[in-house]
Amino acid sequence: MKILFESIVWAEIQTIIQWSKTKKNEASFLGTGQIVSGNIVIDKIFIPKQEVSTASADLSEEGLAELFESLPKEDRNRILFWGHTHPGSTTPSGTDIATLKELKANNNIYIMAIFAAGATTYAKVFVRTQGLELEFTPEIDCIYSTRITNLIKENITEKKYAHTVGTGFYQNGNFNHQYEKGYMPYSTEYTPTVNQSYIKPSAHANAKVINPFENYTNKRKAKATRG
Ligand SMILES: [Zn+2]
Image (cartoon, rainbow, N blue to C red; front, side, top):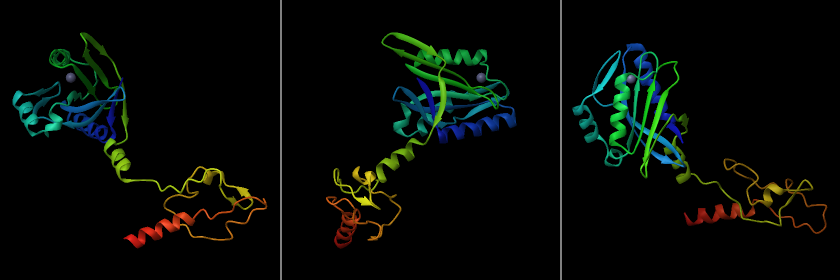
């Protein structure tokens, strides 16, 4: 199980780390996440009101209550991450260990991490499942934006050409296998123009020579007529 930070969250954490380094103060933040393919993806972080010093970032009960109230409903039950920065090393303090103990008592899954500029991130994952309690040091990584990945899946489709397995076409005397797979042999940005010299009649007597752009242009025309 890895802890994966959304790239945007990762950048936001770097911002807090830089602030912490510059001001020589700690800062705490909470994060929402979910289990995706066996890993925990942290997708948002929030900064509750807090009083900080070089060696502490105390989350007040009022600060936490205010944050929870301001959270969208869907995020309220997804908080499972507590992160904080140290101005120097990432070694947990006695207070950090005590806080982690408290979090473990109140949650079935929790991640704690300590960040500092130029230091290896300290992280612990705690999981309680079917009476078993597990605590380990996870691998940490960051991933590309899930939101954008979903938007791409939702809104971007690749143009596909009519399936023509077994036919293909001959181009400059060579059988075009790319076309056999049913895909246009050019990128979707390219607007095709039919060039007869491009598709030469093959030297193979029985070869069926077809215009690979024919269906495509017909479809475009049909669409234009409908629209
Ligand atoms: Zn600490």
